[in-house]
Image (cartoon, rainbow, N blue to C red):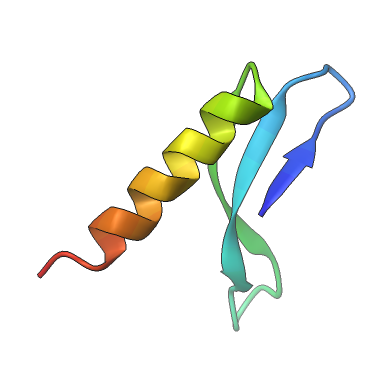
Length: 50
């Protein structure tokens, strides 16, 4: 999940909420949406690696 910040940067959050806190994990802040989307793809890829 990517959100645009007031600073103009984009932040990548986890897809699922933490059951204990009810919030999403911050997975990084990026200067462009394209960079955030590329990192999201990498995260999804590595989640599937054993």
